[in-house]
Image (cartoon, rainbow, N blue to C red; front, side, top):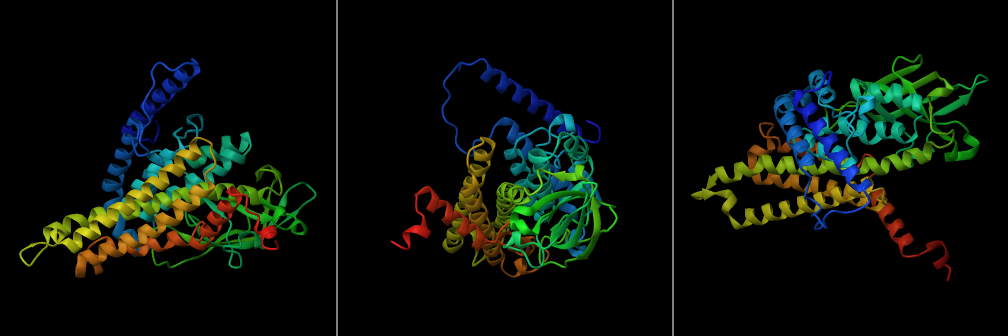
Length: 429
């Protein structure tokens, strides 16, 4: 429990005992009692306790700093250290590697609850868990996990470096190159753009092409620690929203990477990126879901306190219709997001569901945050209320980890495949 809050340490012990009990029950090979199927949002006691812990931390430790972090465009160091102390930066990392040893769904719960208070802090946690940690967990060697997964769970921020100025949606058109040396190491040259967490990162997972002749099948994943000669974090973007989350250019000038810091087989980078981003999209859906929920929760009290024409504006039918629509949209996004998360935990296909929940939750976040400003009226257009920040923060949800158009294209292609439709063949019939 070193460096962890006592409340979270107690919860973690309870979680492990509950998980061990479930495992031992299944191992007996029989069911003692038939249980009714649970609702999708009927969370376990452990999940509900986790949600309460995150909500308390977000409200007490992040809430008072949100405006200052947004104005300064800087993540508060105490907030970052708090994320580590609470165990939120290594949620699925095994306990033997100093992680929290929990599930993907637990990570989604944490991301959602953080986003209700500050989506910028939420995405710091999201990228760490759904992208960086998962790459090492799924593709890293035992030695890499022992060294770097432990660091990422304890005190080190990770960064996922894929996008470039000339390769956004066409991610595999990247130009960063990795040249093989006689000793088996590689020399990296190139640059990355719009890289989340790069300002605080101590570990960079970099996609570079080790064999241009093979096209995207030459793309390889390299682990580059901060301080490696030739690695430089460049310009920090002055963004519309999620301003406390750093987004910078990352430059590579003759960066030597030893062969034991290649993650996965050479040439598997495209596969690693695709599979990891599928998981990451559920994380972004959770961020947008939390954002919508946070905006709504912050707006509701006001519309039942403010009076016009002698009664609270929330009691007017026009307002009631908007409240009902918002609540319905948030509930739908929640169902889609947690369905995708449960599918991932159950090791079932979830690519289509991940694209759907990311697309839909980002639309809901924009719609809800905009309506909340409308319902607040003039005060909603000021920085005295959080609605305007939620509105600024929501837009990125339709851009990063696959734009909305990319999500729709993914969904359509998977529907074609599920229905046995080969468009290349049928269009010539």
